[in-house]
Length: 388
Image (tube, rainbow, N blue to C red):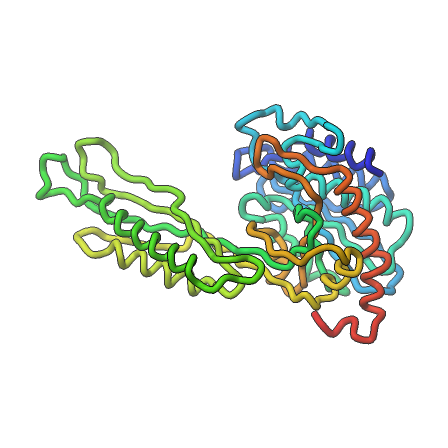
């Protein structure tokens, strides 16, 4: 099992799937075709879905015996770029570790799902299992958006739980933060530096905007912490403006990111944006603020059947919160309880990225236990379906 997993991870790393929009990479087509070929060779009938420009999903179903409701597993196929070292696409194994771009985030989990599909194809599970491999998670999650908008509503019966195999160090992830991208634009008036009577400096108001952000950041640090996720946070990301030393800047822009908690919604973020706009707006310039993009935070009930099934399969695992955002939030928004569980490793998005092969093996064994034992046991109980 370990050798098969290690080989699969290395094959997946060699198959360039750098995100098509985030790093101008080739996208997921090649890796989607590879995954589909592996599943087809196991006797399954995978579907390759076009989720966007150079963005591809793979979906495969394993029909069960009708003794438990459907369960979905999910992993994303794309990776961040390899600008720092193209050699990251040449995987290497050192003992228990496989190094390479995406080994940890999250082609190790893709390998687990492929091998799980091969095993389920040989021995039908108690309930239907859907394997979903998503595009574009590293940017706008268009792959999972496609799944929840077009694929999920057509399922009959619908799934009652999702396990997203993001790397969690073999802990059970029941919550993660959301994020929002925001910006403020200031419009002044260009003029030669020798004509202050004609120019309106668009950059100076951003100083007051930054001060407002600093105050907001302190308030977040002083607020009541979430028991699993700590405090919300923000940081200034990009600042732009001006054209030359001797020209009054006619335009400037500040962009920042806000990391949000499960009790913080888009309306709260909008009110914070208004505070920043108000701080910058007093003067002869025009100030505009906007929320550019939002992904909501995620939290699943510890009493959801999918969480309880994982707890039974891995009683030693802790229930934890994750600082990063995941596609679990999109499944949760679609009304399907989603939990995170995945392997140990190190260096997501870093030059020294690696995944533990022994941890991949344990992850696979845990999922087999969930599918064949604890998931049907939960639903066989009198209280099985009551706590979604």
